[in-house]
Amino acid sequence: MDVSSSVFDTLIDRSNMSSDKWSKYPESVIPMWVADMDFDSPGCIKSALNQRVDDGVYGYTHTPKALIEAIRAHLIKCYGWTVSAADLVHLPGLVCALHLSVRVFSKEGEGIVVPGPVYYHLTKAPLVSGRELIGVDMVIQDGRWLPDMAQFEAACAQSNSKMMLLCNPHNPGGTVYTKAELLRFHALAKQYDLIVVSDEIHCDLILDDLPHVPFASLNQDAADRTITLMAPSKTFNIAGLGYAFAVIENTALRQTFKQEKAGLIPSPNMLGLAAATAAYEDGQTWHRALLVYLKGNRDLIVDRIAKTPLKMANLEATYLAWIDVSALEIEDPFQFFLDAGVGVSNGKDFGNPNYVRLNFGCPQSILDQALTRIEEALIKHHLM
Ligand SMILES: Cc1ncc(COP(=O)(O)O)c(C=O)c1O
Image (cartoon, rainbow, N blue to C red; front, top):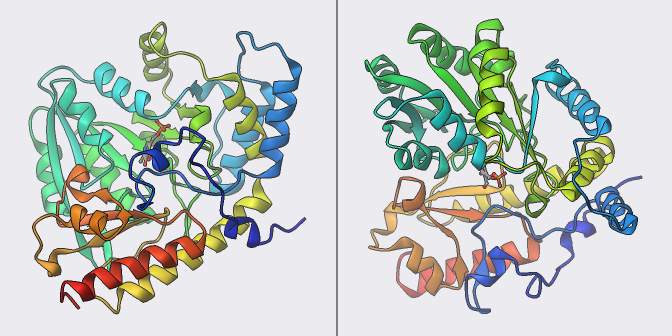
């Protein structure tokens, strides 16, 4: 059955749902910050949840075999990547696995190489655990955000370097790394013997006709040194249900990870397991329709922004637009947007205060309204 775009056009009142997104700002502000979408979840997920709730007994629950098989089938079908059931580690979220990986696979004072601006937990994980954050500047090359390779090499070559943290597709830049680019990153990881943590949570949100290549799928050496982190949460809008997974093919790394996780990180929530199973088994039609809708939203932003002094590199993936506001030469871009009635994420939190991140995972009428507010504010302040 087809999923009509009207599903995504529907306005859903989230004001009584304890939504992080909708409770941060006054009612007059359109919230476009934290990365969840304002869309109704796919019917298959709602049915699976209803069924599980109707069971009435909510005791300790292990990962169902159906979910393991659905994940394996998804990885083969979408990325040609074969992993075994034993390679999977099931988690209540991805961020805890990022922090845990840094603490388990590096020591205090060791260096963690992180290309950025990037989703803030990739830089926070080294910083809060006393590791050295070795930042690598992402720069726009041929319209796409990519790490400066000279800096990347120097960072990896630093004598205390131990790990590389990647975000692919990149949040907030929206880059989908090509196989050739990933092979260059891998060559560095291999040469300097770095463990790689690859956050691939946005891998099913590619808007252009581009393949996602899991870093660990590049070759045997990459598989042996990589912890891949994925989840259905962004794609199917189920972040509140708490389910993510790691793929760790190297047995020694996986055993250490599992051992250190035990007692600290709980098992995934049983409703998260039910939702994830339904998503990977039956969510494809909804997912395809979502991508078409998000692409329409992305194209609308590109179109409207081109008529203003704001700028944006090619956004190949995610529903998060990384917008360059430097041409406005204003002191506090985040506040400027907020005063205009649009609650974006502050670029400062990702590593560049001259940017804001705008979440366009919302009905197009809301996006249109937000863009109009931004345009009107620019006109009012004689900035366009
Ligand atoms: C790159 C990236 N990793 C991880 C997360 C959050 O993962 P989780 O909610 O599973 O902890 C986000 C959420 O925005 C993200 O963008």
